[in-house]
Image 1 (spheres, rainbow, N blue to C red):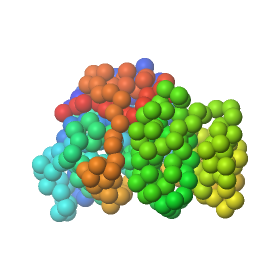
Image 2 (cartoon, rainbow, N blue to C red; image 1 turned 30 degrees about the vertical axis):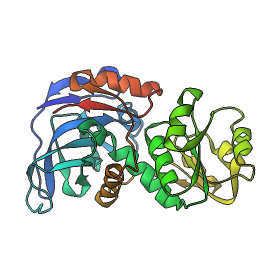
Image 3 (tube, rainbow, N blue to C red; image 1 turned 180 degrees about the vertical axis):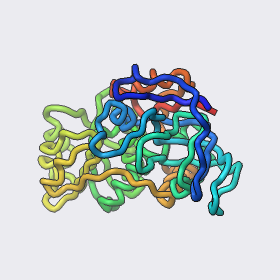
Length: 306
């Protein structure tokens, strides 16, 4: 099968299109024929060696944790899925090796959820990691109606979902972004503010008494968070463990088929919109990683494969 791989740590220049054996399908696993995969910042952070102390890596690596595709075959004892089922997955396993930037990927059946049928394959592939992250962060923080929520990096892949999901809970949402993305945030239901120096003052101008909840999706903003958080407020970060020293929660998204089904259902009900920056063929996937690493992409980049 065709697959994007890298055999050593580095930047996008270490990526190459190669031919790999078809993955084996152990008991309890499913072989998925990939229709589309999506790029996430964690992909190129792993590729650069940034998680070497945290996760086992087996070279050559096929990158990618987001996927939408069709079940090709199932291993022993997988009654919940059948060939032909259309699925999505946050495809993180316990080690880094066989990712989703390939024509086929083998995954534990517990990672799969039904794909949202109201969107195309590229948007379905762009949903799992970002959608699950936003869903789980807001759930952990118990965001409620009539609360005011500040989302750092609100125009990013996770941020756009967090804004919409918080607004759907009935919360007032303030989102940080560059001025070029302010209209976009308004369309998602947020009140935009520019990030950077003077942010606490700009937030306080909108919410003089402070905010109830802060969702940090960028890192390095603990002081700004504490400057606007009400006494007794809650905050969490997916990017900065420093929040733990200040009463916050540092968390990673966890694979959950149940949560994934909930998120897909929100897409099909029109509650959640998936922002797609662009879609490229597998042959141009290395360029997709370069664009993602530059940090100026609004939404997600999908890689068409099947």
